[in-house]
Length: 306
Ligand code: PSU
Ligand code: MN
Figure (cartoon, rainbow, N blue to C red):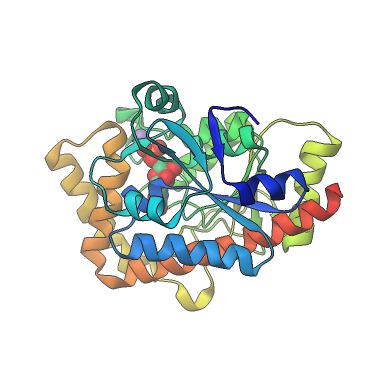
């Protein structure tokens, strides 16, 4: 283990023994959900990973140290402190050099998970191609990371704050494999549908674990894998209930001239404000569902390596 990483003893022991581990990101805690739902979600999701037989490893940079597996105090700090930076992969060396604390995005979490030897990662939604990207050039670094870092990311697809069609197109161009779990349609976070077909479909954890094994262990490919896991039907929010909120959020974004890495946190916050509790409840439900699925995949994948 490299010394730049502080790996929680429980996580280190599981990895050394070939037991399943699931990585969890921290930008969703610091910049994706409001307090106190963020820390409640983070704690609950770790419990769900355990209940499904894997060890959770929430990842962040704490005072310049890349930290794999957080204490309850560290989770609380990320959920409450205002000066926690949003960190994608390019920000990691800067945080390490300056000794600052940062919450890792999907991209940065993947990078640190891969360095630690963790192959399966659960989150809510991944970044993608923003609406109007032809003008703004705003495309998440999550997509480029998935092209080069061998970690499977279980998400509920992408929020329609993004251009879902262009996001799928970009992942195809980058050579990022996209597999939908148990559906023929790519999901749109709050909804099981998006109007876009699933690039590929597999059904359930054993088949998905076999897919990971074929990718990395048999073929020796080095790409990440995007696994889209549709929100359970009972928690879906109808698209028309979300559409108005997203339009209002995008309008405010343009009026306020927000750009760069502040765009996604601004939109996530504005959508919650414009939909009230409905979108937040769905968001929490889908993250928990993804944690359970990711843990099931990690368990099956560990079995295949054994
Ligand atoms: N989408 C969500 N919730 C989130 C994020 C995206 O529905 O919390 C976060 C994730 O951490 C993701 C990041 O990696 O936003 C993407 O930010 P950007 O678009 O700046 O790359
Ligand atoms: Mn961006």
